Amino acid sequence: MIFRFAHPLALFILVIPILVFVLSRLGRWRTIPAVMLYSDVRLFDDMNSGWRVRMRRTPDVLRLIAWVLLVIALARPQGGRTQEVIRGEGVDIALALDISGSMAALDFDPQNRLQAAKSVIGDFIAGREFDRIGLVVFARDAFHQSPPTLDYEVLLRLLDEVQLAPDLLLDDGTAIGLGLASAANMLRASTAPSRIIILLTDGANNAGAIDPLTAAQSIAALGMRVYTIGVGKTGLVPILDDLGNSRLIESDLDEDTLRGIAEITNGAYFRAVDLVDLQRIYDQIDVLERSDVERQSFVRWQEQGFIWLVVGFVLLIIERLLRHTVFQTIP
Image 1: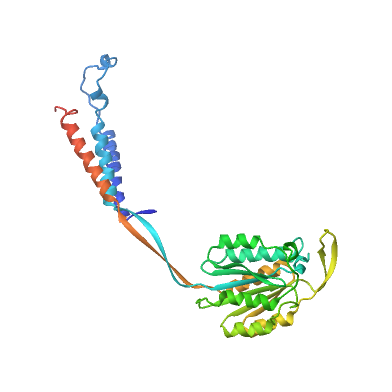
Image 2 (image 1 turned 45 degrees about the vertical axis):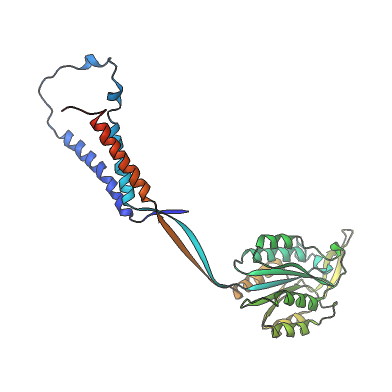
């Protein structure tokens, strides 16, 4: 709820009584003092004055309040509610996230690869407004963690619950093709003008019956675009085993396949070896894939001056009645 005056300049009329008062005081200061003697009235100081005497200024106060209320009514106070109209459509996005055991590698110190990915993806989701976003996780198999939704709070909560496949007692592996196909299936029924898949993985396709490049060709035929992100350093990287002991594993990231997927679908391939790289990549994708949405705000104003006008006239009537009855003076 917002408030305004349609004619705010009318409020300057309130300055008139102040000017009249100031000018009257200046006139009194310039008056020559009287020289005629008059009786001393201090003998009446101890006498109790009646309530009429104590309240004799009431009509003047009522007239002043009425004056203020009528001036406010003249300025046309208005209350309004803002209504927002969204024109256009957002982007439909499927996030495909690798949860294979190698995502526990600690080369994103102090976080492992999965923790770093979840943190940056969370920031990416929080920065969108009108886009439906879904989440697919994959290891040896692929799962829909969340369907495309505008409820980002629920989506962020489901993202936070994502764990590594070994921690969930799932078969380990990296089925990139299956993850792509699952993400594409999530967006297949979408009518959004732009549909994209953001695939993040640290390995090579070693599971599933679907070849990643074949999946990419089908995705391109559906008019979808894929951004692929390869995470992790090459060579030997540290990882914690089930007993909490550190050991080294060989990073087997297949950049050629990820680059091929991006080229086939008219997307782009990105490489992230630390948290700064990963954040920069999602920022670039965020700029590349913006919603074609126009936000328009309308305010419906309602006049509220009538009540001020009524109260002001009522006070004027009361003032006149009091001045000619209870507080009537005889010249």
